Image (cartoon, rainbow, N blue to C red; front, side, top):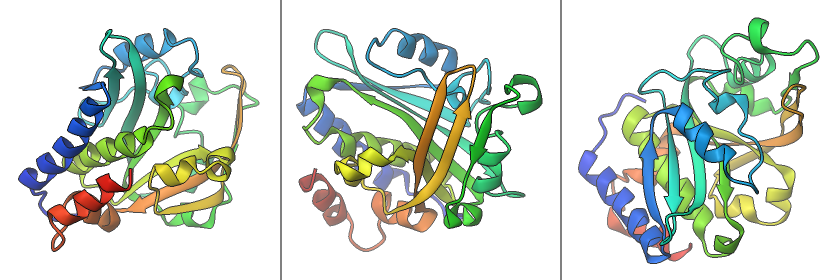
Amino acid sequence: MTNVVNPLQVSRFLRVYDDFAAQKGIKLSIGFDFHDYVSITQALPSKKPTYPTFRPDRSPIKTGEGYWMMGIDKNGEVVLVEAARLYDLSHTNLAEHLQSLKAFYADPTIHAHPQDRCTCTAPSAKKISGKVAYHGDFWLRKDFRGQGMPKIMAAILRGVSFAMWTPDFVCGLAASWTLDKGVLAQYGHTHHEAGGSTLQLVEDDIVDEDLLVWLTGEELRSLVDPRTEGELAIDNYVSSA
């Protein structure tokens, strides 16, 4: 995407969801140091380990190419985390990026275990290229579930990613149970497809089979910076949360 971002519209979009989170007793913040992020997530007893994708010891993220979000309650305790990073896939595509393990390790020849594997059979993954914003590592504390928080979390990530990068695609990987239980719909993903990732990372004891979820850059813009619908698009999005 090459169109100029309307900073005023993006700020309005983000303010809506920041206020919505505040109404639920959650204060949101953004960070850029992933050493701090790993320290925070390691202290969350009910959260699964953060994938190497967002760990600087395995996959360093350059300044301006990644960020993370955190929400705390009135007691200052963490209730949600999520992270995003930008991949330059101008000379490749998401399927190749996953299967080469470069989505997880800066240098798979150094960091990957000999038995690490990733297979991506989702047809659309081969079409996802250019500037690709990858969203992941979603975690929400149990007592805040069932309150519309997934839509707020996804919207904040989309707004920030759009403002920072105007990506050609926004994508992620999601467990199949999120589709079966309706959680995927709450995150508002426009597209999903089976075969996103069959993954084994030996040292982290990760064995997953995930769906591919994504939005195109134009679909992202229509949510964050609508040309014709203006505030109505935001109001409709909030009212459905």
